[in-house]
Length: 415
Image 1 (cartoon, one colour):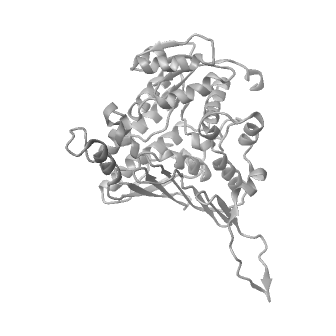
Image 2: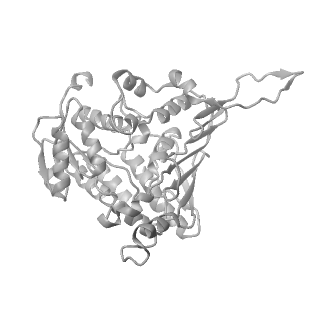
Image 3: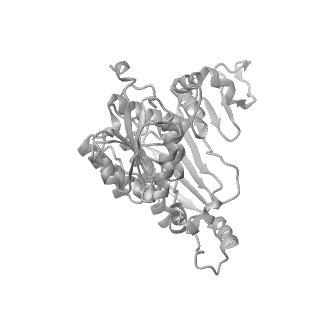
């Protein structure tokens, strides 16, 4: 029984100990029934910082590795979290699955469709669960909206929107230390970071479970923001300065088998406050993150002489609905005390992973979800390179999306 295993200690390894991993380690080291007993990084200083972070909160010994293959040989480690640079995620995830470890890897787009298929094949050959650790799937508002959708408040969903809208011009200042993300901005032109929005949207639309993405088309604006900032920092005559291939605004439109459309935007090179640009449009209502509002059509519009009166449409604060439609995951989280980075999302996605490892069940974000979301990056590149031509989105489920078994019962389920 799940209840009898609740307090079983799970030993975890962390591969890649950059800035993102440090935040994850702070949460993991404070969790009950979790021990991060091994860390791995090719840079010794980062590895030591990871150990130091763990030992601020925990007293168990932590082993150090510079070769992740050696960490994966550890029989006592049941799960591995990968927080390396983007290009290494899939390669290490495949090795981890083949070593029999529950595998979680941080967010980021794929470099090729073949990579995504390799990830899926490794799972299907090994049966070892693998999960992209998309924290935004566990955001308070994203989950509340999911709950409202499931309860029918929006009616039939017609269209969703989202984006990664985040001023990251500071990336231009990271060339000196060879920050890997900078190289993607310099050399690629596509939606580099689609999963923060496409993850929750996929759950809203039952992607890979009764629905799927069929095609997408992407368009890139000109590139100016990062070039201007880099020139200000380095000067155009400095050999470290290079022009950036990435358009300042990347707009992608996806069409679903169910007839829904999705628009997502990558906007990281121009001045702006942070936003994920989420929106849900249904036959009975609409949610807009940008104005923190919802509108639901009245169930019984007023009538005058048998004719429907024109209704004055007014936005309502989404918080008015939050208490009634708070997702059960967040109800428990609020009762227990919100903790962890990014408003608690980091903690919840980690707990979701740990719970599945403890109980040896499937993960709430599976390999088919992960491959589909990552593939959007290279598909958007292809579409842009072909003049915004539509491209097909692979069906990584090989047809099983039409009818799949329910996800395992879990307090962290997103279905």
